[in-house]
Image (cartoon, rainbow, N blue to C red; front, side, top):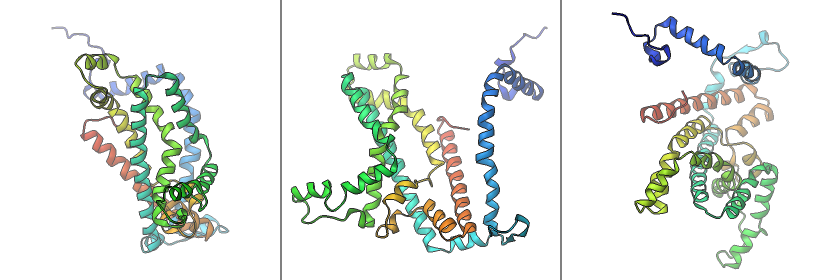
Length: 323
């Protein structure tokens, strides 16, 4: 009996012969050669600026001296990593980094999703555009300007202290930036103010892809606006939320540099100093390039672990994943 002629594309990839899988890849590559050529500049950029600098990681295993040639450097193995893990300051900045990153991650997701849901429910288009514009604008302000605004507002004679004193909630001005225990909350509120509008863009775009028929059917069944948000909009946003969560987990130790550096001072340093500032202080400030590089490698390795863990959990839950 003659076998039916089944198109190769309809056969599952894992079931195809190995040679057919290779031929299929090159065939698709040839068909999409225009896109492949467009990717070449970005591949070159990534290689030059992302992969070639990895050569500098060798400094973490040397007593690096800038004036010496590579062959003349003294190799010390894992000495700098041992020094790093024995330093109490490292654990303090690691704690600060994890806490600030977690605050940024949680507040970023919650506030952006909430604002997107509320904006989606607004029927007045003019007011909706106004709110969107006002919430987007702080994103385009540099951290230098944003930090100056925050320091001015929270200064002893700033508007926050004046309002609290007028309401008789405090008797005398509070030195907000002089107390370390306030720093994490101030930084979290500042991050939300600056980026919440910008972070809603992708959620609003995802909401537009939800089938309007679902809302119409729910409305006919008597579902309230809150229930439509809870049972239609949020499940529609779930794949986008999972993908963004995986991407953000890869930068869990990237709590930022500019806001901590600009808002930090000697009085709140125990709470404001993070890994990036630690690397800058040891690598450039003290000239200990090897220890700074070791701290940078540690941050990268931990970020990879978080990224792959989040991707694995998403895969097990049957949600969208990056790879």
